[in-house]
Image 1 (cartoon, helix red, strand yellow):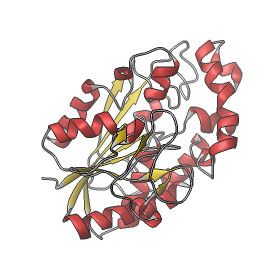
Image 2 (tube, rainbow, N blue to C red):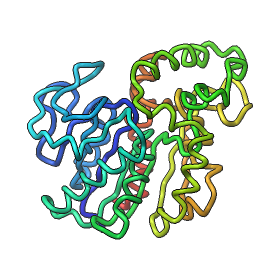
Image 3 (cartoon, rainbow, N blue to C red):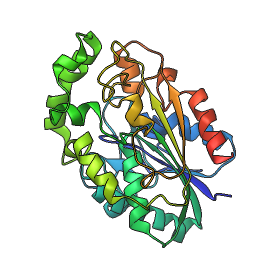
Length: 298
């Protein structure tokens, strides 16, 4: 049995600290990534926390951006707050500190981590950072995590090019916006979501997930071509192959269950941008939540 579920948002996400009783009082209660999933877990009668995250180092008090939040009742220190545009290993240190905080202050001894996008990488880095110290991570679920590279990282690293879009207007739009977005927001994160970087990082993570069941959930709404598999199909930021961790070696990922949602996008940001209902996003769909319930036995 687990004591709690901890939700970990991804790159460039701003998320307040929440627990079962406290959340942002205005706007989306747990930010634009984790609000619907948090509400679902609460409805299941399970203790749930969201790990605080922001763009840059500091505390999380509000998000004045798209579908943001305010009036955060509990603000945790910067050292246990993820810099969501920083380096993966640094985020892992902050998340491990947050988990230790839960162990010390909330009696959390066994925890399930559910990470969206880079939140899955942050979670893996935190598991390594914790080592044999508590709390014990009993399960990891990843949603659209770039296990083996991302559209943004591989484009910036010249692993994929505009030619690989095969003229697809949506993918070309995503490509066009990727470089200026990374230039404006990244403090190291964009350099660490390429296939080239993550394959080396994965090798260094060998053994970290031993004994921890993993559920990897990928999406692939954009499917105008079949090749390269590094790109097609993709959810806007991550290929279905990468999100499912299809090519991650067993030494890194010894125990995994994979699920596919081919008609889904990465987040509600992409759903909004392409005229889809929010429920077509991995973090907002009850059908995805049912897979998480099955994985965690809740």
